[in-house]
Image 1: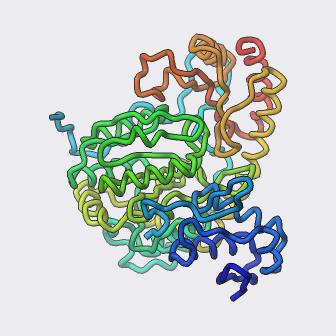
Image 2 (image 1 turned 120 degrees about the vertical axis):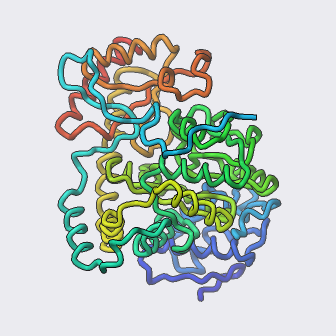
Image 3 (image 1 turned 180 degrees about the vertical axis):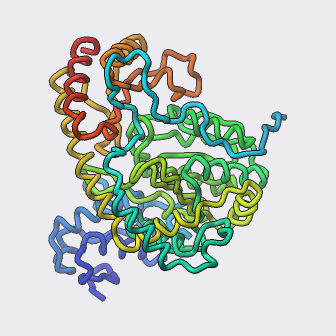
Length: 483
């Protein structure tokens, strides 16, 4: 126990990461009510002196918790615990579609295709595709070998609907450590990727009486397709500089990408997080947090998961599709207790259990630290690529990239939909596969050409030997057509 004049914190200075330890101690104090809403925290200089830390460590911890919504900071008023009117900080007539099978490859999916108009090799610059050449084949093979050598015979029987205990425990530990998710293994459900898990969850919500869900606008078309296939009507949530608009929340659920909105790249503002949570509590509704690329933030530590603010109302979802490869087909959902039985029944009915061998291999990858090492390596690669992309485009146009420095794509705003189409067509002729905000179903109303136009540039997919050519070709293209 380390004591300050104002604050008692359970603080482990032996962990080697004092900033993270301080953040965890403050979160726990707020969550348990030891620091009530409105409580004023000690100044950073005072707390740093009392705890024997560098002032920058305390400033960084405060800033992280402000970004996550636990604290608020106002000039001249210091830092205090966020107002908690909703209790969010205490954690604690439509035709029925064919439901006979889970949709596997809905329209708008990111399957790699060769453009027939390209005269040479196609360089993939669409968003959402990692560097597949960097998949850790040797490490994965080693995990498979170890898993098979140690697995009991019973493990290879029909798997449990929610997933193998070993992987659920490993995922729970990983998410708590890296994303601040509040969960135990019983709340983790293993799925064959996010898309399958979203359909299963939507069917579980439908079973409970849900008929409408709101999703971000712009957002991925395939999510709307999957949700509609599960029997839900989808309504739009406009996305602005602070993320999705809580005033447009409707129905019994909302699907969000809070840490890095896809495709605009903005972060859901703390006040919007609170309002979504308050809405969910008032409506007995649920929020689905798609943390699709939460491991990859380059300008600071990632904002913690929204789920920690209201684990009884937020379904947290992640997968290996961005960190490893889409073909691995492994995802995880942290599910509030009221949804678990319905979701388990839907999984059994759909025959949607995940391969036991893949689960065992992933559990081995996590417990041996190989997954963390791979993510750190890719984070460095993607950080460098995004910086090089920004520098190259700065030479070609006066328009800067939009969105935070995170993930595997960046948004380049354009003057018009016509300009967006010209760039995509010219890129195809040069062997560059590009995406824009129009023509790919990002907007709920595809016919509305009054919405902003932009290129969505995926900088992760090109293999290392093609990255230089991709930068050169894209820079010349933007300078000639998009300047």
